[in-house]
Length: 488
Image (cartoon, rainbow, N blue to C red):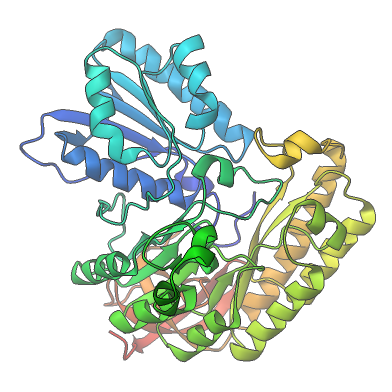
């Protein structure tokens, strides 16, 4: 996978994989929790929820596994590599267990459902397996394992949205935060395991979302990202699954809140808070969302719009419910309504039956859009997906590698083209922290989510600063501050 931007949060950020959480200590808590997270941003967000639930059960977090009473690993089943990593970690935990027999080990998250029998019964390497919808059941499950029984809850829920559990912000820079708005997904893309690991799509009550956003503002956060596997299909009509909307009452339908409305409510609730969202889906994104973005200055001009392939034949095989032409039409509309909107992609190369012609279609789609950055993968079959059951993974490894190289090279060219368009501009940047490369520089992002670095001077983390852009690489803008923005 390639990053064309310091630490983006779109799909899987390699740099944060396996990070442990640390929270402020509660003096009254006597037990220690060690929790590691893998996978997408949704999992990191879930770990915060878990930590918050367990804080009430007497657990403080620790960075030292050896002293932990409970060790949890929040897993991902998107890629094989993630699975191997988790397996290795579990072996490590078990080695520690020999010296600390009171320690309990649990697996959370997307891998839980599939590996429960393996981990619990066959290999006996864990005490507890908890799926992504069962976190509220943790207090009971912990009691079970304290009494010496294995605990499993991988039931996928129809209504669990964690609307009322305030997440504890872990490893936060204190400036940017994620706010979860939907869970699960109803789009059955054949390569994707999310509908099976995270269940049917349901939306969280807008009131609880706004309360969380207001609370974050009170605590000094300056930017939030509304998070969901598929944010565009957010739909609140008093609870219930997205797919049951047609059975709602007339009153429920009339007062329902869709994603554009939620975006507007959020933007208006905190007019000085920057607002982003991720992930969007081409078939679910509506023009009212783009119009809402254009209307509110505090909604960032950036859309992560995964396409996965440029070939209509492959899009159909993937069960992406849009064509290349419809995607272009959406891109044209975005550029018309928000001319300086940045767009990023996810691309899968080497999907079963992909021909050279299909591959050329992907490259020509990229030429048309010229994405600001992207996340590119060679297809790898995921257990439990429709593609695994129905399609033969028939593209040779070396062909996948070569096509991936083509895609990455082209993306790099486009990323540079896009960063060069910022040269000479003065852009508003929210300072997030130190630049990785130099302590004398701040790092932040502009509205388009491009990383900007500039000399610190007397500015501080959390300031909105106007920065004149003087140089660039394909991933980073380099400039100098010309003053605070009127936005502070």
